[in-house]
Image (cartoon, rainbow, N blue to C red):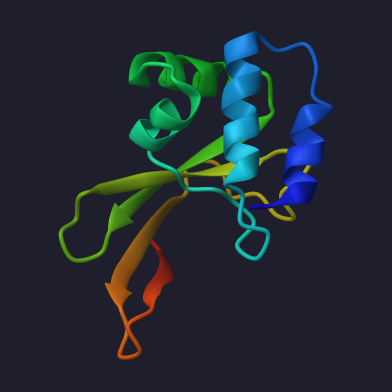
Length: 121
């Protein structure tokens, strides 16, 4: 959780109620060390009580308004889609290049800790 991201999102105006709820959810899940959030649509849906289709429309609206940039992620070994990365424009320290896709290697390391290594495709 990033308190700074939540403060930033709370000061965003001129968005619909559903877009604001989704933006606050993304801000709440923003990782300040990584610079982005990566919740699944299902997780956002569960957290906000909106349907997955409403979540997708709200994220698209936030992208059109220039508040969020989505970047696709693909699992390294199974080559299947993983949860998108969401960068908060105006808050995230760096933004990905347009169209960039990240390959993630997700596993438990020898210490039993969840690890994610990033690779650029």
